[in-house]
Image (cartoon, rainbow, N blue to C red):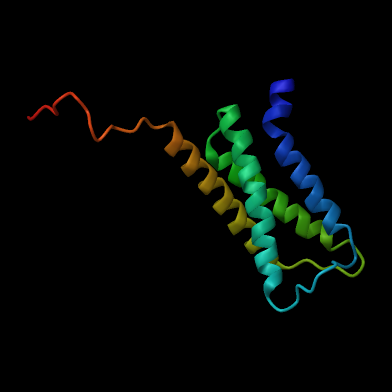
Length: 130
């Protein structure tokens, strides 16, 4: 169980933070001039990174991390519809989903890039010719 918690705690904590922010009737910054979509993208890109962390440590396909993040975004938008002063927006869910996809892809790209052994430019062994 501790391995599960270590793998998924960042995603669970960030999801809780997102829902806590969604519980507020107002937000402390002006997000009405189109920057709200950027804020959604950024928050969900962080979630995507956290989900990818858990996904890689659990050995799951990255599609699961994306699916979970998109589902969380959809549930968050539905939840916001129940909060006085907030509303559901398809555009927000799209920004959430794109953020998750970006975060998962970026983390997986970076992690896989680190895992690959790099060939040395000064290799002492000749390259065989076919």
